[in-house]
Image 1: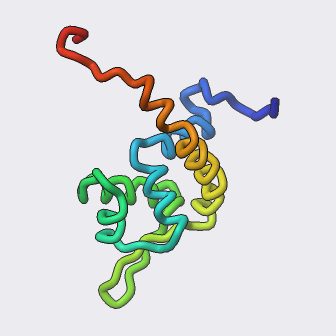
Image 2: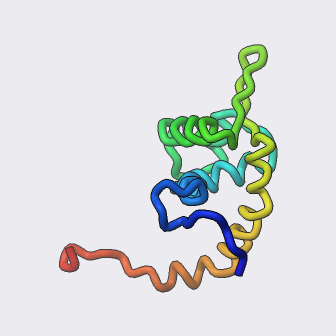
Image 3: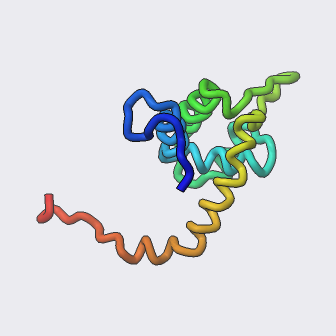
Length: 119
């Protein structure tokens, strides 16, 4: 196993922060969409089922704040693109996406919806 400085178990570990950023519910989906091509806000809304405009805006701003996404505005047209740092996530996200395609049904099969009796 590879040794890393710091520990993701420590609150101030940069690796832990990085994992928390991309583990956000929508971050990986947005990053995966942008790995395909630059997109406008409305295109991302159409592409990503179930995300609200507000949550997409918050997710894009957060990803921008951490240097993973850039916002390009030109002639009234705004597009979002991956930065060089953001592009370093394309391969890991592709592997995760492949795993999800292969095992998503099995994971969903184990999911038991909560009932009022369990609460």
